[in-house]
Length: 127
Image (cartoon, rainbow, N blue to C red; front, side):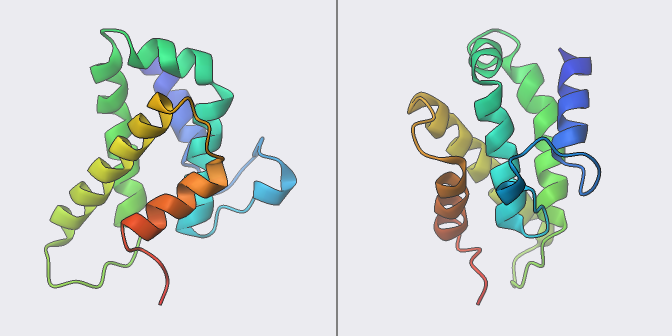
């Protein structure tokens, strides 16, 4: 599981290299586009993801996933009086809860819409 997760996450979070997204989604330059890419892979591997996340290995999965998500948010400009490490943990935690909600909703919402929901809810929209 650890090897599977690390290989998958290294691909998902890579800012360059081969991408298996449809061409219209293959733009990983903005936070929203990177989030779409993450949702895309969750949906593409829906059966495996649901199996892993409903098993006793779920904690291992999230334990490997969280540092990647935190690194993603560390790359974002955070203009706040709050400590950066608090904000990174806040955004990572809320993003994980968003993924869990989406899984419980049978991934009925599109990847692009989910990324837009998260950006709006977390108030990360560009000003």
